Image (cartoon, rainbow over all chains, first blue to last red; front, side, top):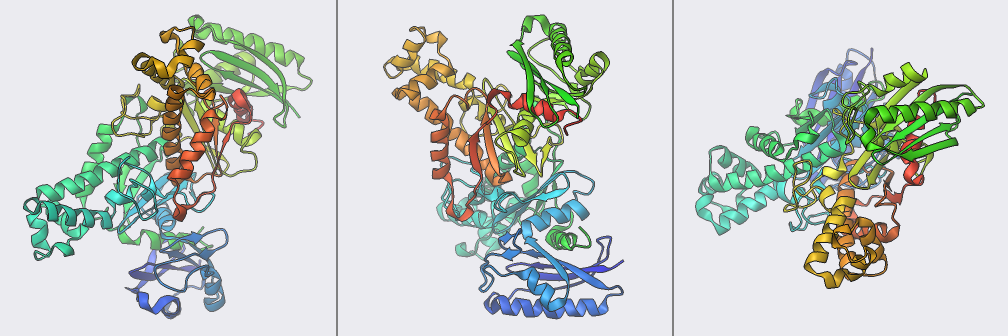
Length: 317
Length: 317
């Protein structure tokens, strides 16, 4: 059986890897994305690392899957934009076929993450999963009846932008009270800085973790201080958990999936978020509508989209 | 080709019909449900009317589908409860096989409605639809990749119980702020009576439509008065439309279906609800997340579940 190539192109990191036909990862090459290098730099890295891995492969490599950290028009196989220049409307799969002679499919990282966890991670053996990736922003992917459900405009799974509060902050999307304004890494950092400014006494440990520099407060520092029991940090984390639980309850009512899988830096930062999410879900749940959907952390950690990319490769589909 | 039998068993009405193999309705027999007669009465009606229709069929009838107005455990083909006695855990499909010698599949009316509209109604030719039935309560069904998605606990599509307000009324399900507490026929009637009690001057026309009897105010009267421009009635309808639009936006973010189809007495009461729903959806929408999901009324009207029942018949699946 042939091996397949997989790549995960993200805004800060990228991964290129070789997988066998069972979805086992054989070789991995990773690096930091040089955003200033734009598309050309990234394609140069991809070509070089892909050729290096294929030269080491003990089996022929004929196909490839790519997870892309930005919107992807799956039907037309075009990546549509990114914080990095040069990608708008680019036919990345076609480029791979032309330059690496591999049959290739591309999807966005949230759908790829959902597929990766469904095929090779926490969702193995299920019929439907909802995968959420919570890091600077919030993305999501839906697997339904064993297939990725992308929706009419490739917009399914956008749980970051469901309304969780009537009077919430204005979101980057232009909406109001979106989940992303409360529960993303960006929002948690912002809330941490706001609370430390207004009430430094309840955020002393968070501030200390950032060398007393209020403007340096990140979601990571808030989570660490919360894990140590700091009152202000715990408040912010519990607000985030409450909003997330409300969003998950909503998703359960609509999809009742076998499993909800949480990935991304914020969700993978330990049980400090997941435990209160489960408690709030319990509080919100209704005995007459009992659902056995499980909420778990991503098993493949930061590599869910990379495994999903492997599963996109035409030979593994 | 054989004809198939279909039945829609509801809490107030029931329908039994003969369909051809293309899903065209050939003969229809309908009646009012006698709730006091319980299961035995209903089964007697079903047997008699089914035999009558089959006797008139110009083709053999070998299979049957049933839409049931209560929870159905689809995997085990058991209906689980209803406001009428005798149904709990009853194997209705098995009863049909034993008593009418027809192969039979049973599903709840919301899933059947979704399937009916998808196969034979507004959703023809699409890949995914969300169907909502808004009458005394709110139910829903999801079609994804051309198949009904029932979910792990047969609970998918329960949009009546997604939270649309933080501080809302307690719902029959035990939750708080569920869509059903604002937008169901029951809720609209209740709100109409409440407002007429507090501010009779803004509900004068609604009251007049109910012969001045405050306790007789129904959702129907509120909709009629709203259509005539009454301030209080319009307020209630707009509150319902706002909550519904929020729920639909949420469903669009999660599923981005080709189409959202609204059925049931409240949704079919004309454009007095649908027009403001579309306006609120427009107001809530975000330019960066543009979705082309259409929101339409059910094409098969009150017969969506009956057509879905026909589509459940093993020979039409």
